[in-house]
Amino acid sequence: MVGPIAFGTILQPLNSSMIAVALVGIQAHFGAGPATAWLVSGLYLATAVAAPAAGRLADTLGPRKVSLAGLALVALASLAAPFAPSVGALVACRVVIGIGTAAQYPCGLAMVRRAADRMRADSHNALAALTVCSQVMVALGPTLGGVLVGGFGWSGIFWANVPLTVIGAIAILLWAPADPVRESSALRRTISELDLPGMLLFVAAMGLLMYWLLSLAQSPYWWALGGAVVAALCTVWRSLRAPVPFLDLRLLSNRALSFTYVRTIATYTAYYGIFYGLPQWLEESRDLGASGAGLVMLPLALMGIVSTLTATRVQKRRGPGPLLLIGSVVLAAGGLLLALPTGSSPVWLLVLLCLVLGIPNGYNSMANQNAVYQAAPAAQAGAAGGLYRTAQYVGANLASAMLALLIGSHSTDGGLHRTGLAIAAISGCLAVAAVGGLRRGRGVVTGRGA
Image (cartoon, rainbow, N blue to C red):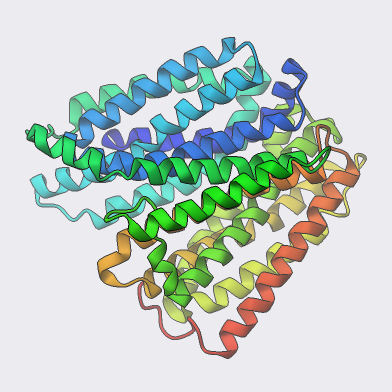
């Protein structure tokens, strides 16, 4: 029953990763440059805001209704996207897709738990399966996207959403438990607790920051940086005053948690630098096309799955400390290796490179997730987990800005090499921090929280 109920949860990881091999085609179609970075950032910003809001609405309206509404948004935006007249319109479609896909995971969790309670079954294995499935879909996204782009052009990654949303809706209608009857006053109370001002301030801060970062390659918009600082300060002020803040920044008073969030932002900046930068180079400089780039990226996906399983075992015995060191060192090595390939490098060498680049994500993600779990107070575990996801999205946004700055509108060998050195520098700092943590004994004992 888990598969049919939570089928829609694959949409968010797929849509966040398939775009990696479609960016080159979209740039060529619209004659756009760095502005295509908003296709990545727009979806992540929408997801960061919509996911917690959808979770609260699901608790009030019922997860079945909210999930179906989200699927409808994804279908409508995906039907409109291939006919977008400009990059701006396409970004708007991606934002709507981000809102719709963001609803699926919290609603899927709620429906699985409700079904398990009804059948008096253990939901822990089902929930773990959802997490693993999400990671697998992220990893396989570029390969699937390469097949779709090769067969249907860049619009193929949007057309694919339509049958997936139809299948997901049918599965929910047939197998998902019915939503309980709610009082209308509960909806009004939930909307009042969504902290809409906090959401808008967060979007303004991140949007203006991205606008400034993307302008650095040409003429910096310093007013955008100033606006980002003001919006960020207002976000902090709102978080400290709201009874139920969108971002509970009071958690940052916990030094272990705040350090983990900073490390997560840096880690995902480096990881998504590879995830979005390498396919672009494979298409443009190595001239493999979207399908070829997707196939070369497949070993990265497969190795990421293997490393996740291996990291789980190490975590149970040694805790997150060794995982952080292994993940950071291998990520730094992978960054240095990215400074070597040229447009004439053989495919087998690129496949070996992807195998190495697939190792660190499993170790880093497992370590950071468990570090958050161990450091967060039990009563604030949900808020801590939400802030962790936000840190991931911030890292993904910074990665798209980094690529726009280092690569620009056309990926060359030099752009890939600069990106690799930047990733190596970030990961080197993470490795030094991991060594410091091990020396202080942080996260080495047992596998508590695994």
